[in-house]
Length: 151
Image (tube, rainbow, N blue to C red):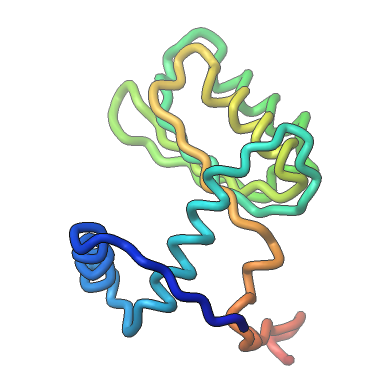
C-alpha cells in the first residue's frame, strides 16, 4: 500500500465524515478507498473495455406492454453467457421488477444493460458494475462449499 496526503476543504471533509457515520466506517482511509473505487468505476465508461466484471441490472417494467416480457426473456436467452440468474417480482397489477446478475466484459455488460433499459415499457432501470478482481480485494478468503457441502 501507498500512503498519500491530500488537502480538502472543511465542508467536503464534513460530508466525508457524515458519509462515514451513515455507512459505519471505522476510519477515513477505508472510506476514501471505497469512494475512490466508486468514483473511478463511474468515471471509466470506455466503450472498448474488456475487463471482466459482475453486475446487477435492476429494472421495473409494464408487464402488459405489448410483447415486452417475451422480448426481455428472448434478450436474456440471446445473451445467456452474460445473464447468470434473474429474480422476478410482481409489484402490482401493472408492474414487475427484475434483477439480473450479469457476468462478462464491461463493454458487453453495459451494452446489454443499456439495451434492456431502453426497451419500450421499461420504466426504470439501473446497472451496478463491479470489477471481478475487486470481489475479494480485501485480502481474506471466502471459502465456498463444494458439492455435497464439503470444502
